[in-house]
Picture 1: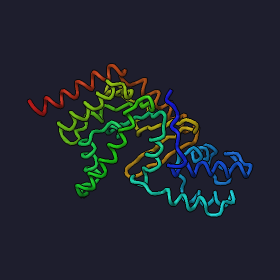
Picture 2 (picture 1 turned 135 degrees about the vertical axis):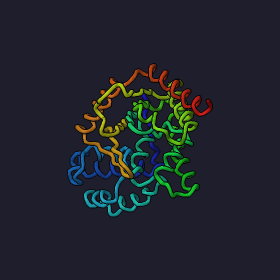
Picture 3 (picture 1 turned 90 degrees about the horizontal axis):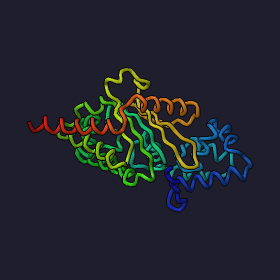
Picture 4 (picture 1 turned 90 degrees about the vertical axis):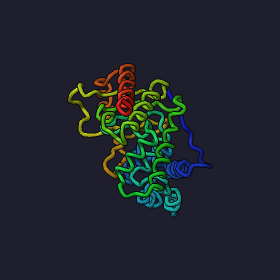
Length: 279
């Protein structure tokens, strides 16, 4: 099992806020569940705030100051910790991703961000933002590629991904870009930095035809599920919903090719893209 990822309260604002929240809650004699009821959130959400795996939202910071008699401590520090280089809808997910001990993800339409090459990411961002400047695209690509460093030490993160064949067949950036992108996925699998499975077209109908799945587990905090749409995203920690999507991922993995057979297909696809580019 991957080891814990400790957050240093001295260097991480979220860790500092989480430690202070735990101290203030215990001083009041409240359980996580009891405090969650005062904020109309789950006890697991309070646990995630205390563990630093969730970003505190301004509306909850104000309620916490009221419930725990902390003046404006959480309101002030929440504002100070709110700055991020990521788009607002992805901030919490990116921070959770960096602290996760395991990520299980199914992507139906594109190669997952943690596996993308710079050229592929650039093609994706250009499609998202057709009028953006080159400098803006450079910044977006740099942020995305920085996230891929999580896979440099696979002992710290179990990354298990099921990629729909449609994501690998969709021409994104041209054949040269696709050859490099698919080869990158294959190399990560071959180097055992991730578990990679391809869900082939001939698998037919499957349990997640309506969207993607991304589950994140943590050491000392409840798991979360990330829902993503066009320009939007949110984290969900309701245990029954998380469990449902965990089973969804298990069924997807059962329908997909084995890791070994997936690697064979990935290598063949990369060669096809390369050869078709240079007949």
